[in-house]
Each structure stands twice: as C-alpha cells, then as structure tokens.
Image 1 (cartoon, rainbow, N blue to C red):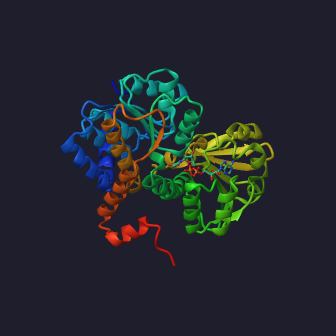
Image 2: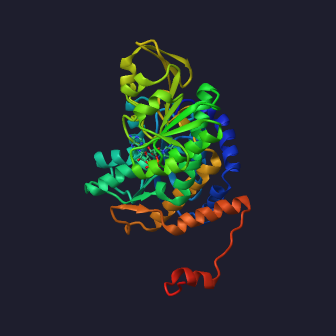
Image 3: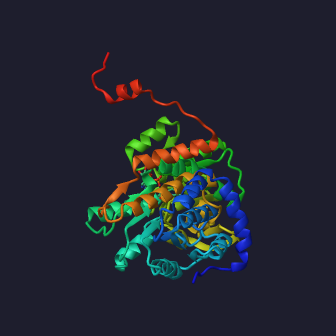
Length: 414
Ligand SMILES: NC(=O)c1ccc[n+]([C@@H]2O[C@H](COP(=O)([O-])OP(=O)(O)OC[C@H]3O[C@@H](n4cnc5c(N)ncnc54)[C@H](O)[C@@H]3O)[C@@H](O)[C@H]2O)c1
C-alpha cells in the first residue's frame, strides 16, 4: 500500500507530468520501445529518487517495459506531493511525502525494499546502503546510482571490499554528468535561489564552493546573470581551471568577506563553517546544491545566532549575536530541489534515458555482472545522445570509412 500525503492532489500531479512528457521526447521514445518489447517483464524495481514530474516520467517508462515499480524520495524536502499522488493512482508503490523526518525517510526506504526488488535505483546511495547494512539483498541483480556523492560512496565500498552487489554508475555517463550536473545544476540552482528570495543577481558577488561539474555550470550561469563570480576549491587543477576561466579564486576565509551569495556544490562537509559565517557581510545569503545537507555547518550557524525566523518558505533569517543577519536557504538542503523543482525536464530526459536503458542492460545481464562499480556502456551513452539530438532535429556529420581507419591507425604522421 503506497503512503503519500494526499491522493486528492493526483489531478494536479497528472497535469505536471503530462507537461514533462512533452519536454522529454527522448525518454518517451525509449518508452515506446519498452511498450513494444516489454524488456522488464518479471522485474521489480525499487527507486529512491527525488519525486518530481521527471521521475514520474521515468517510473511510467519502466512500468511500460512491464516492470513493477516502488518509489521512495531521496531527500526529505524534494518530494512533490501532487506528483506522488498521481503516481500512486497510476499503480506505482510510492512511499514519499514532502517534509519527512529522518525516521520516516528510512521507513519509506524500508517499505520500498520490502516490495522484493530485483533492481535498485538510487540517488545518493541511501537505498542501497540500507539494503547492504540490513542484509536485504536477496534477489537483487544490480544497483544504479544517479549522483556523484552516491558513486563516491560505492567506490569507497568497492575499495573496502564491502560492495555486495554490482553497481552501474549512471552519474558517470557523459550524457548525464556533462548535461545534468553542469547545465541542469547551473540553471536550477539559480532557480531555487530566485524562488526563495527573488533577489537581484546582477552586480552581486556570487561565491561558488567547488569547481567540479556542478560548480562550473553554476559559475557560468551566475556570471551570465551579471554576478561577479568567486570560486573556492581544494583541488589545485580545478582551481587553476577556474582561474583561467576568468574567475577570482581564493580560500573560503577570504571569500567569506566579499560574497553576497554563497553556494556549496562540493559533495564535502563543513565547507562553510562558523568561522566563515562570522566573517560574512550582514545580509549574506548561503545555500547548498550538493547532495547532502552537510556542506554548510548549520549547527555552528545556530550556535552563533541569537535567534532565527522563517520569512517565507525556504528562507530563514538568522540574527547573529553580533547583530549581523545571515539568510539560509532551504535549511542547507539541495536548494534547486527544495526551493524549486530540480532540473528542467529536457535535462532529466538524458539522465533518465540512461537509467531506463541501464535497467534494461542489467536485466539482460542477470547473473553476469560482478560486485563492482561499472561505467555506463559507451553504446548506451552514445545512443542517449543520438535520441536527444534526434528529438531536436539536430544532425551530425558521420565518419567516413577512411576517417575511421585514420583515427584508429598509428602509421600516419607528418
Ligand atoms: N543539486 C543537484 O541537482 C545536483 C546534481 C548533480 C550532482 N549534485 C551533487 O553535487 C555535488 C557535486 O557534484 P559534482 O558532480 O560537481 O562533483 P565533482 O567531484 O565534479 O566536483 C566537486 C568539486 O568540489 C571540490 N571540493 C571538495 N571539497 C571542497 C571544499 N572543502 N571546498 C571547495 N571545494 C571542494 C572538489 O575538488 C571538486 O572539484 C555532489 O554532492 C553531487 O552528488 C547535485
């Protein structure tokens, strides 16, 4: 039995999902193929994903392939209750509602695991880690991971010989990482900041912590909105890249003094600590777009504060004991999903084409995959790009036989 907030929201959810379907033609093409071939017959899937309209399009695509799908949310604040209601009405076992407590969050994960899945789709590794820790792995063929932080956790398990099932790192597909993380996070993070505050971006000093894929996309979009962008990094190569891309690069202790808006996207903890907050200007806005809410040390923010009040959804004003004001967005959770709706459908279509096609790949390779972290097969990655290009009517050149031969040979030189 699904558990959601309110089934009467299903109609609003349906309208949202129909809009997303119009903007995910590549995934709809995969759905058509799944409808015909039914490649997931007899497969049960448990997915722990942000319950958005795009995730609904994926869930329905998997169901079209004849899979049975259970879904739980992958962040306490990212579930859209109307979408959850619509999916429950469509026969998906949804265990998710906006604002779950930590205890409820893991209850939902355990309900999804109790459906007896064969394939696990995760976003941040909480579902699969729970299955491993609680030894609920019977019948499971493979796990798929959607985000950088989850892949890092699984690689750590692989290194420590604690990985108990094969994992496909969907995050690492080029058609995921170079589109979703860069373009999607760039746009949707600004969207979250604007929906929470409606602040003017032009002229502001915008500090991006982490110049990985997400950070690069965010820096570029913030620059495009007229911000002066400052990058903080710990990796000298990424820092040098940011410097050559024209940004100011400095440590957070320095950046704290100059920034108006701060966004962490590192996948690391304590990137903004109390000592940084003490140096910030009054009125500074801080937010996080990395996977977990550990990037901003909100406990230290609280202990520096004399009080706080919620001004509007996802906008909290902390009054420091010194009298300064600091604004925290979405409690330090992923601002693009908590304060906005996550990435646009067009971006999620390539991420979720990879998920759907990797589920099919895992089902077809049942019993043949080893307990290690696999990359997405190149043919799938390439096919996803072709599907997306075709949906825009964009054509590419095709290598001639001579060109292929030339690229594969070593004999030709000056
Ligand atoms: N908000 C979203 O929708 C969304 C989408 C994709 C990924 N993510 C998450 O965002 C995070 C970053 O993902 P990514 O793909 O950009 O990862 P990445 O590995 O490409 O980049 C992370 C960068 O942060 C840097 N870093 C680490 N610790 C730091 C510190 N203390 N200060 C400054 N920089 C530091 C690293 O050197 C690296 O360059 C992950 O948690 C990922 O799961 C969020």
